[in-house]
Every structure is written in structure tokens, then in C-alpha cells.
Image 1 (cartoon, one colour):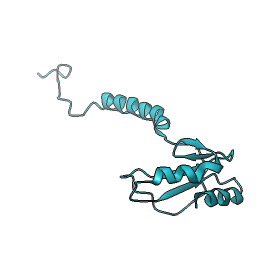
Image 2 (cartoon, rainbow, N blue to C red):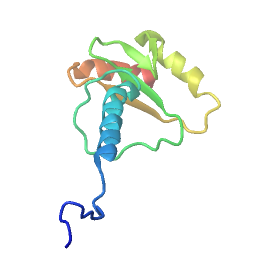
Image 3 (cartoon, rainbow, N blue to C red):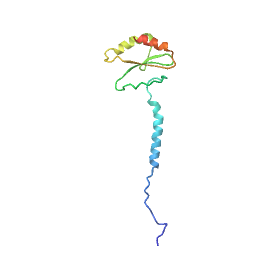
Image 4 (cartoon, rainbow, N blue to C red):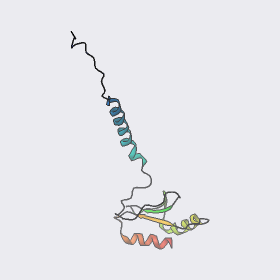
Length: 119
């Protein structure tokens, strides 16, 4: 007679508990570190449909924040000396492209004033 209590079968199910534990730990790590990866200044940009810039080369970016402060890349510059600083920075560069980022809440006249200083 066969005893039903001594009958052992091989379990063919995969134990996914360690896998789930590792995935949850990685999820928490990425959730904590993702906000730290943001670079540059905080500017509330208007919505646009343009394609992103090529990230292979370093771009010269002028930023105007919500307090009307002007930056070249991450360095604060006064509006009066903006054109002078840009001329010095663009000397010896093959491309003379300058990109402008402005907070969507600043008046358009401030942007025009900065653009006039660039030219």
C-alpha cells in the first residue's frame, strides 16, 4: 500500500519573491536619485513642439529666469555686459549658435531687451 503522506513531488514553480524584492529596492533607488539628475537652472518653459537639441556638442545657452536674472549657461551676467561676454565666449568657435531659454511668465519686452544686447 502506498502512503499518501510520504508522497513528494517536485515543485516546478519559480520562486519570484527575491526577484520582486530586488526590483522594489531598485525602484526606490531610482525614485530617490532621479530628481538629483536634473541639471541647469529651474525655468518654467512654455510648451513647444520642436525636436530636442543634439547633445553631442556643448551649446551656449542664455537663460532668463522668473526674477529677470540673466545667465550664460550657469553663470549670472548683467544685461549690460551680456553682448561683451558673448563676444569673448564665441571667439574661436566654429559655430556661433546661441540658444535662449526664458521663463514663460516674464514679459516679452525683457526677452527683446536681452536679444538686443546679444546683437
